[in-house]
Image 1 (spheres, rainbow, N blue to C red):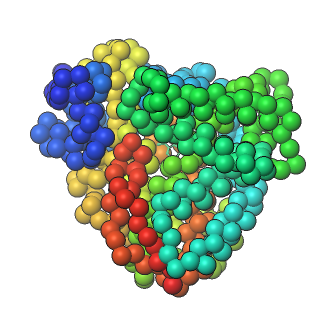
Image 2 (cartoon, rainbow, N blue to C red):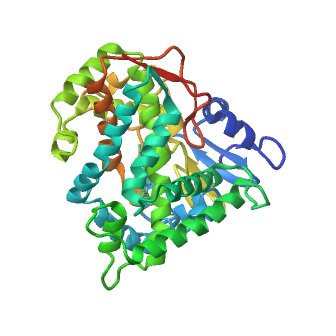
Amino acid sequence: MKAPVSKGLPFIGHSIEFKNDALALTNRLREKHGDVLEISILNERVTMFSSPSATKQIFLDPEDNFSSKHGWEFSIGPTFENGLMLRDFDDHKYHRGLLQESFRRDALENYLEIIQPKIDQWIEKIKKEESFDLHENIKQLMFDIAVELFFDEVDETRLVELNKLFTDSIESAISVVRIPLPFTSLRKGLKARKELLEYFESKAKNVDTERKTLFSELVKTNNQEGGLSYFEIAEHMIFLLLAAHDTTTSTLTSSIHYLSTDNQFFNELADEAKKINCTDISELKNGYIGEALFNEAMRKYPPVPFSPRYVVRDTEIDGYELEAGTYVAVGPLVLHNDERYWDEPEKFSPQRFLDPDYQNEAYFPFSGGAHTCLGKFFASYIFKNVVYKLATNFESLESKEDLEINPSPIPHPRADVKIYLN
Ligand code: HEM
């Protein structure tokens, strides 16, 4: 059978509404047409699936019918070409295998050691102030952490330049204009890509392997036959920067705001934090209150709200025909906010995840199948490190404003809010 079609406006389809409020748009369309719908995004045919079973089938993709590379290349492709999500099938498997080594447990514990001083410095900095701008501060903290883990750099002036390149590359991935005309974000992003590639490629040749950073691990594990070239390492590094930064920033932003509204939960988190050594993975894993907060932040505002795939060959999902050359998209954002699967989905409520055995078939924060997030454990450890340190260094947090989040393309506040420290 064919999916119902909702074309939207000529050429731009639903793109503008999608950018302004993707959840409102997808909910409205789903109510009208059901769980499967063909829409048009910048003149391309995209079949949206909003059921847990179709989402699972598309992520697992046992017959290699769906290309992540061609699904994502439309948005992040130009600036993040050859990153892991921009590879498919055997080629992807080979590269993922080589990257996986840098995410092993002892390597992650070293990374956690490395980032401690940055988080401590941030805590000391905000202690001197009565309040801080939430999103702005978390973004900067995540950049400072990325510097420690990803860049082999100590020169302050160079770091400012790298921050700018990094910001330009991310902004280009989420800009609507997809032609690199002068002064567009995409043009700036491509320039940033070129400079970052040069940086990582030249640094990879003599990276300090004594410092056990993610960058040095990636170089070290590939210093053998069949390993990656310096250029490939550089390509992976800039994709990893993208994958790690805004995702963790978004979960921390919504969670810290929540902590400022629920004192009891804040105190429970502080009690848990006091018992946990933040560089010990076994202890971090047991931090179930921190985990519940992390899970709820990803539920309400999934950092990757939609995942696109390109249909490689004619196939079908749940009886719906899909033509080769078109696209499919699944939306954790839609599923995570669907009242058929969640009680009061509009409420930010970490309590729903407090039972460690709680499962929900409509929960896909890290996608699934071959492209499941490679940094999912590391992300939760970074998250817990930050919220635990906040909980143990302050009596309570307060906010006088609501936090309104635009959930796509990556969740971000419509306006920043201040957090007051007690
Ligand atoms: C809250 C934090 C994070 C969330 C929610 C998240 C989510 C995701 C999702 C949904 C995907 C797959 C998208 C798709 O299949 O279309 C993905 C891929 C990926 N993520 Fe994460 N991510 C997070 C943090 C991180 C961090 C910290 C790192 C690394 C340091 C990382 C590295 C990666 C990589 C390398 C991939 C590509 C995997 C592949 O294609 O095989 N992520 N992430």
